Amino acid sequence: MLNRSSPIPLYIQIEQGIQGLIVQGELSAGDKIPSEVVLAERYHVSRMTARKAVDRLVASGVLFRKQGMGTYVNSQRIHHGLSTKLSFSAAMDSLGLQHSTRVLIADLVQAPVYVLSALREMGSGQAIRIKRVRLVAGEPVALHETFVPSGYSMILEQDLTGSLTKAMTAVGAKVVTVRDTVSATLANEMHAALLNTEVGAALLEIHGLGYGDYGRPLRFTKAFYRGDRFTFELEAAPPADMTFDIAVRQLSPA
Image (cartoon, rainbow, N blue to C red; front, top):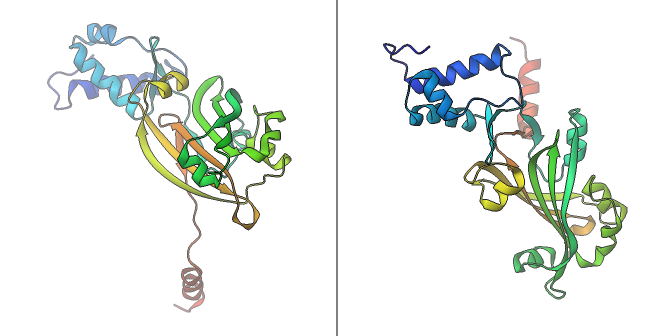
């Protein structure tokens, strides 16, 4: 029950109560929590107060919503490197997570001008488009849309439900370096439908341009990751002079 004489707002007390049920094991990953109407009745608060508690838990990634189905306890967050050079399949394998891919589009298409410019394909006007939803334990968590120069049409004969990195390497389009841009965005109707989340849900958007030997652009990727399912990690080595300085200080007598 809520302590109405406490300085802690009621919605935070409800939030803490739901978190307590998860910690105690009464609610597990994938379990559906009571609706906001039921929570409001149970705690004798307004529906707005109940919704605020649930919204905070969704925003922090503890819960997630399925359109038209309700709100559920989230699984453990997925730790992933912040680069489109990393293979999603390989990363999920390394974490021991069951994953699959749903191919939405794999065809030669009239590509957007910005894609053709990035791939230096303005003359042809076409590129191979591969659009895929990536799933973990059957749940859609990421949307990847990749464009490859039209000269690599043989990639359409590869298995695109696995690692695209392997498929590209198999057709002679091995990516050696990448340049990524990262930004936060909100899910639109398409994202919400494909990723089983709500319009306005937090997403991380990564644009990556992959290059082969001699700096030739080989692929342009737009990737959208659900913010409630991923924690992104970035590793960077210290500058050489900093490493040297640290080593000198460690070797110097006190």
